Image (cartoon, rainbow, N blue to C red; front, side):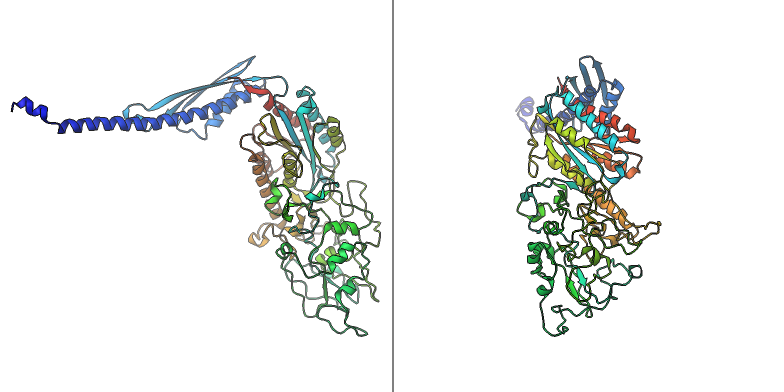
Length: 637
């Protein structure tokens, strides 16, 4: 066979060469597709940055090219450290144009000499006169006692903001909805709130927990001087107590003066209760609901003690009925976790319902070492026996006994006429105003705002209720659906301080007392409810961090709940998120500033620090500009 024929007939080498060439082309194509896909995703990210930068510039004519360029580069820097970018800003009378040139590094095509792919995007935004979107704004305003000297400035700044928003809507009141949510240690949802929202049956986990199952001891002699007694902070009650009167029906005591064996209900019916529901509940002294049984581990009475317990289930609404010359004003406690920081509508589960806020009567002031500020009933209880019955001297029993709410003696101490309320509504701020388009109603509500003494500052409570006024679901339903594209939802939070429960740890002479016990009541319960004593909600475990003061641990907990509710609000809807603006009045530590700036949608555009109260109007004006700007600036290309 001719030699050339032999070579022409051989195919093995050609196949190897062709296979190698084809494999290289396939690998290049596959790898190139990956690089192209990566560049495509990169381009989408650049377009988003360009759009945001263009809107940022269009919202405020005072921003120059360098500010807009810096804004865009700050958005790019954290995510694209391997990329290079050129940002060009063109600012004209018609709006803002942003052009971004970038490179997308190749992984596979780089093997063939193509190190990167060039990507170009541009965006244009214009400033349109008046609101483009409808707005729903919740004004969450601090009205704690520390605001006493700042209320005039707060009212004026808020009134000016409302006027600015309505003017931006060309006075079309249907375009602007505003709610006003004053807060202190709690929030007032209105005394006419439907019972469908409320825990009317007393079944919520923490409903009246501070006075349920508390031991009350009846003594032949008045209690000893409280300055010589020790306030318990553990689960073991004090062992030294006054001797007990032998009372018919007392558990474990069968010998009664004059004979007879009696019954507990017989004695308890001797109380001068006006409220029939309370008598009915007393009949079930030792039958706690499942929720309440899970709330506490009640201590076992000592062998020498003659205790009576308050009922295991008590309803704050019944207590309001039993206290003359006062009614529930409308303040509520927080719901058990996780419902305290959600907009979950109230339903059949009592833990999703709202508990009426009732500040229980503080102990009688025996001397200056017991600085109670809300003592509106006598601690003597109305038992018809020879020696007047006295409560045990330890703090929980004196503050927590139900038996002094006898519905008979009209307290002359209750005073609800001003900011310093004395009575079960102490610390309750003015009622919130749900979302409304009625400008006059909004202005009247703001003009009438005043501070409230007692309690503390509970920022997560204010935020949660501001959110609930915007939420389309119950309890308030004035807000449109989250995904309504023509409406922007906004919260403006104002505070002049850090989260705190007010402590009464000093007497009138400034002598320290037990700060772990002497604290006010808020929507979270008493200061001791956070984690001290055997009547505790166990929000915190003080023993896990013994080096941190107790009230600082309370602040840590409230800060954590604030961060959680802020994130929940921002994540309520992915496509149309709620914007949060925060304004902090005064000079504060970096921790408070970080909490407020982190809560805000953007530290740059949504967080404002008014170091002086005189700067509050300026800060509110900037917020109004951002709110209006978010509606006026539109992408045109």
